Image (cartoon, rainbow, N blue to C red; front, side):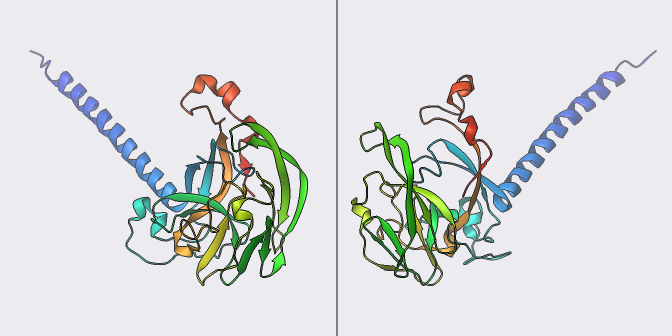
Length: 258
């Protein structure tokens, strides 16, 4: 008499093996994602307009975690109990667009442009950035259409600014050269710290506001913004894929950040 109990048992084993394999693949994929996010690239999205025109609300970027070496802020929840930076440490350069942890709480992610190095004297006078007593070259290259203070689309002055060392980037002045942060005292950047500013000069809370941002310790750097990999209009949501044909900014896809 044949034993018909063997084939079902074998089939059950295969089923259990298939489920276990699926779990193993998922765990491996999650571990790879954690490693990539921690040591190589981390995605960020832009929720505010402080870096217009370089970065727009709705941009999604890759930030290189290895650009400056690593610190506790390179790891999820800043969980590693170490001080300073370690492993492949490289010095930031003037003009880099940097993601950093807000010194005020060491938790909130900010993204700004690095304009002042340790020991620099930084000041803004009538909208012109001065570094170590010399005005930074700035030339108007046209207008940029963006939302004004009242949310209306309007042309605002667009400038090309060239920092010491030759790095050029574009900035805008929503309110001309007479806004609140267009005239400041002189700041002296402490050792091991950096001075950060937004490219949207009249709509950026940055190192000019000492009580909110101030000088940023090197330890707080998360990484350097490298590339926009996706971008959507402000009123769209990434999960609304049916709106992608009209809401995705296709011309910003895979665009380098300078």
